[in-house]
Amino acid sequence: MAVSRIWRTALLGMAALIGLSFAAEAQTTVTMWTFLDPTKNSGREVALRRMIESFERANPGIRVRVEPQIFSELMTKFLAAHNTGTAPDIIWVNTENMGAFARSGAAADLEASIVSRWTPAEREDFFVRAGFDAGLVGGRRFTLPLFHATTSIFYRKDLFQAAGIDPASIRTWDQLAEAAKKLTAAPDASGRVNVWGFGTPLSTERTGGTTAFSAMMFAGEGMWERCRPLYTRPTGLRALQWHVDMIETHRAMPRETIANHVDDVVDQFTAGRYAMAVMPFARFENVRAQARWGGDNLAILPWPNWTQDKPGPQQVQGWYAGVWSRSRNVDAATRFLAHMVNAESVDLWSEVGGQVPTRLSVWREPKYRDPKFAFMETVVEAWRAWSFQIPTDCTTTQFDADLNRAVQRVLVGRVAPSAAMAEAERTFLGRQ
Image 1: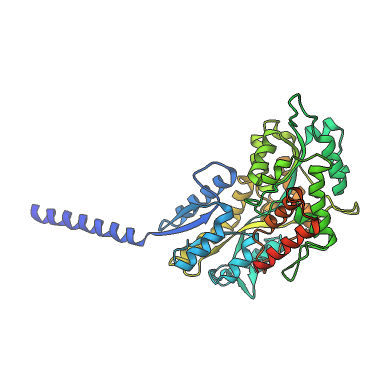
Image 2 (image 1 turned 90 degrees about the vertical axis):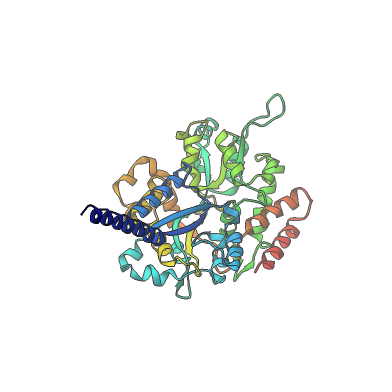
């Protein structure tokens, strides 16, 4: 009897070990490339961490491994990995890289695997239609929006008040230039200007689509027509000259901005170096939390226009996610991507991450009527009034770097604006 019990115990132990072995074999790991790091503590990173945790609780056989990347290098690295068969299961794609991703053959069809299973009401819940439809080409959906982004002009209410400037009075780019001159502090005893009226990224690296050029040019002839650049049209030349004048004529923007990328401008604005600055709307919460001059003084200025008849256009940008078409974990990856865009996750992206909800049902929740979310309503209303999105059928990556280089060519190389913009046009066409 004792021997029998010993064998029975041994057999049970072996069965348990075999069960553990099978469980280990059944474990699926989904790899994802994104510019966020869920081990860190910014709003969006915390939101991502929480949705990964909730997904893994509901799907104990699946683990999500995030491999953070530099945002400006994501698509280049992904396409190289696709060609060598080593790409991640899920890739994050920003607006400028949508065209390249769609044409690469590297994207699984999410219309068939996710969207076709939704009810019409679920589809319509994505109320920023231009953003939602951006990932649909020829009946195939290669991305879904995680959160919509945009570029905004942040400003300090305290400095506006001290200068006697009503933000509502700034309706044109000329009026913004005049306000920036008033907001620029006089040089100190050493000749240093401690507060400049306006800042915008003018580096050719790490600009990420975050410049004033898009809003300026879409208010006129636009930027492209069937993937052909329109930079040398009157509005393009006027936009270029406006940037040059802000530095050389109005002296309301430092010359060093030609070397500043978006992170530089965010850091400098947060430290108190600018009264107004162009930066990603997604940085609002971080800037408000870290501003040395008091986050309650932070606000967003509607985009100016060249004329006073209506505000300038508000760009619809965003970060999307797609599934690699050759992934060995397509089903698991698709399930997690669907989880990242469900109502629970959209709420996390919004309440914790500071993003405008992509779902109308989430935006209508009573908690979003709290005054702390008023800055979101400003952008929503701007999208409703006049919005635009960069076309996804062109290779628009680095277009902003081309335009920034044109500013540098005029300022440093003393090239005529028309010649500088013609160079930018040729560079853009070379990528198509």
